[in-house]
Image 1 (cartoon, one colour):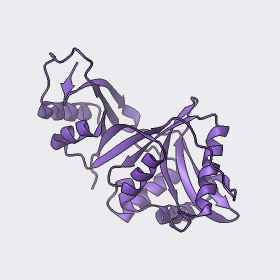
Image 2: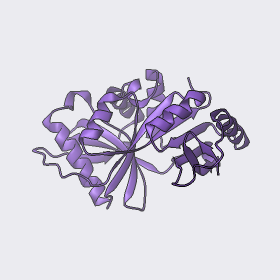
Image 3: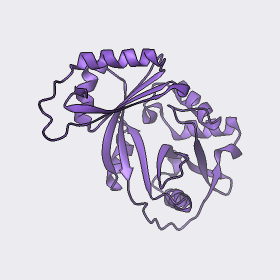
Length: 247
């Protein structure tokens, strides 16, 4: 057992095919205070050695709380910090308008990319440039692996020929799924159309027999974090992510 920053390493997952190394930390159990702690610098060395051994292009450290993440990141200096939320019960949303959900595959690459760029600012996604957002849009539309996840689907909410918003979710056979990027087009935020979007998304998830969702938001995306907490989402972990060769 390795102890770091008041937590012990619970699991180490290597997704070698997609070049992703994930390390999960969990709180030290009661009565385990006599364990010899590794220093944060030793932890960084261990991560580097493991990432090199499995040729990982991405390293992800999942921490039980933001305090632990901040402490660990004093040494790791990862730029990408995300808050992980859980919504245990899909809300019932009454909407005066309805929308349909269509696969992103129904949109051309150019059309989808243009709409994606209109929905997201780089800071929303923990990215630094519009070109980074454009590259992510290409990857999502072409269903390329994203951070070790290959099996996912994207949907666009439409009223007639108008796109209201979009979201991505990991395909799963369980009743729990992970959401990827989610956004309304800016012109429809805080309008009745936004209720149609959220109502349509919730109905789709129910049709898929999903009753719990998990998602991550960049720590600097204050608007989305505030919305998540106001919607009774539980903050359950914090993740530190580093892409080798990233900007």
